[in-house]
Length: 308
Image (cartoon, rainbow, N blue to C red; front, side):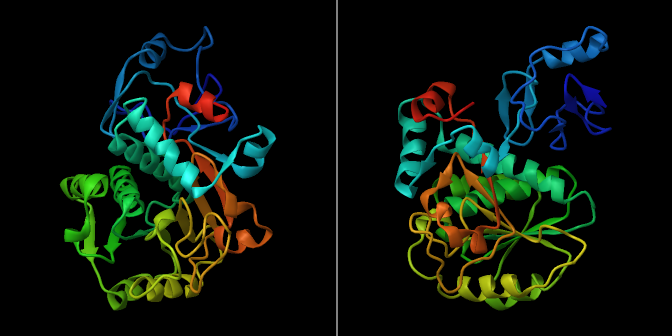
């Protein structure tokens, strides 16, 4: 169904929420504001009705499908800024302290947007997703992603390389949300995790270290990254490995790739590209880059020079 410039999956209106599979027919449009006069009246009412977004557990002001990721080349055309890792952290601080946006809301927005993008790679509903998580907010993003994919009826399992006791703050809340939603979570050592990621038809999502790590990944992360990089993948599938924010082992400022560094086919990075992603050799680690909208207030976007 094409509605007001947007293409909807067949089941988008079969239940009382906007499914994750809603996507844009025109990928550079940012929102739906009007409907053609010949659209069914009930759809006009739906568009103007507040909804509860099941992917973020937050109240949506309106049923406006929005683009949640933008490819780097298109961002460059729009003069999108590039931030250092420190500047990116400052963005989160500004959103929380000056605009009263809770950190968990930003995490849920980011994770839901990533899951939305991953569904494009999961048209085969039987294809399994393996989410590899660590202890920080990058791991928290992974729990949100897993919960959203599970809600979209996709097989997904989380392998945490750290004990649950090491989780805190928003990452712990996201873990608890995932557990409550029935997501399969396994606290694994490197041997168990490596055994699982041997399945060549799986989509492997890197939420291990993010921007908060310095230096080369150590055990058990190093072994799991090396195994993920070694899996050949199904040749009929374009995307096998996805990094969230930055690939584990990749320096977001310098662009230096440690040994080992997760070799992504696609990196979904938050708010802006990171400085290190502009280094000519960065693509060996990042693969394609898409920028993820995490739901920053419009006034903050304007202040940062982010189109929106």
